[in-house]
View 1 (cartoon, rainbow, N blue to C red):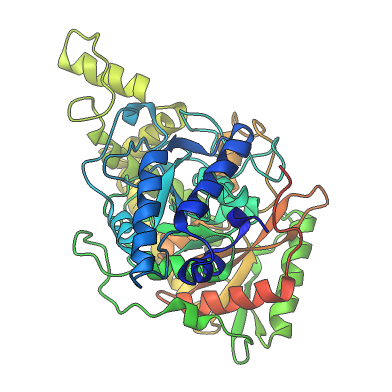
View 2 (cartoon, rainbow, N blue to C red):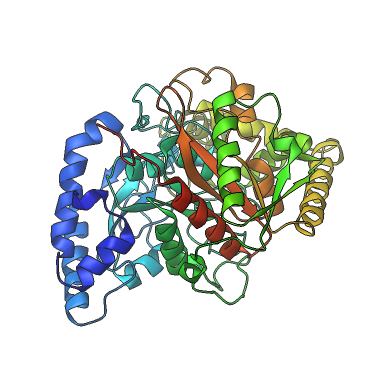
Amino acid sequence: MELYNLPIHSLEKMLTEGDISSVELTAAVFDRIDQVEGKISAYITLDRENAQLAAKRADEKIAAGEGGGLCGIPLSIKDAICTKGLKTTGGSKILEPFVPPYDATVIAKLKEQGAVILGKVSMDEFAMGSSNENCAFGIPKNPWNLEHICGGSSGGSAASVAASECIASLGSDTGGSVRQPASHCSVVGLKPTYGRVSRFGLLAFASSLDQIGPLSKDVRDSAIMLNAIGGYDPKDSTSINKEMPDYTAALTDGLQGMKIGIPKEYFTDALDPEVRAAVDNGIKLLQGAGGEVVDLSLPHTEYGVAAYYIIAPAEASSNLARYDGVKYGFREKESESLAEMYSKTRSQGFGDEVKRRIIIGTYALSSGYYDAYYKKASQVRTLIVEDYQKAFSQCDILVSPVTPGPAWKLGEKIADPLSMYLSDVLTISTNLAGLPGISVPCGFSSKGLPIGFQIQASHFEEEKLFKAAYNLEQQLDLQPKYPTL
């Protein structure tokens, strides 16, 4: 087995026992990047020199008996997360020259552990998209089929993990942007509870929905990553001061006493038959592990997409007002007035999808329309939260597909924004309610495209997610685990 194919927990043992060094491991991963990056296009920026220095420091730390965890492990980072001294573009031309003067809290935590940051990976511009085709710096491909999307907006993160161009990655999830690409690329993707992981240093899209989460090769690695990045942060006003458990302790066999909710709204005729079959098989396996199935309803699910696509663009309209060509980033210099500079900078700096959402959001917040749109969407959001509260009074977890179908072909939906938006119908409500959710690989279509299994839990009950996800993973033991590139 090649080093770059191994999960964190295997490599951690090899590093601490002296079987390999971080320098050796990092070199192996860079060799892998050199082999396949031309096909995948996952990275926007590689940071070879600093990664090699970090690997040397990690080896010194391990030699001093201070290793373990993520020490010496090579990771990729979604380009929406600020990294001091390393370009952070958000996938947008408007931030192409931007180099942050500080680290996001999650990056500071990774560096404190001794993790090796390889570089920044591709994403839909400002995390707005479901296919990663909205990136200003190239479109990453699905490692399982290079003609298909890898998902979005954390597509570069999912593709880099699936192609073994890193050991694990950090992404962000605003409406499914970790779970959906994880599903399409056959990796594990976790969206933690809103407030569990600091958003300080994350480029803001929709502040009441955004959450940083890991993408990894297996469930144990996901738990290790959340252990590393979770916890209270006074720099983030939405961070929750709540004790952090050791999530790896939840990875035990058997689901006796666990009630598994099956929301009927997530299992409609619109589901691809192969997705339905793979998820149904996953449910049977969870039952076989001791889980008890409960049929229930989330009646306001059908309004989730409409509410999301008012709330998220409205918050984006406000957040993206800061990109005006004055303080940092791209500026159109051929302007005769301040107003013209603003207009030209934003017109040339933002892509079509970002401009579309800014216009939608500004309209929804404008005088005379606020009550009809944003206020009404916020009321629907409350109803969705109440649906979940009622559901979790009857069960421990909710299970469903992650997406209605496997990854579609590149270019297939790029001219049809509504079709693209509807592909997020099964993931959006999790963000509206601030809940944790995880995508676990559960099979492949007849064309060899991955299918994901979604598990949701109540606020701060990630341990239930991990327990169920771990048992599903153990029961399935999916083969093949790695795409042929």
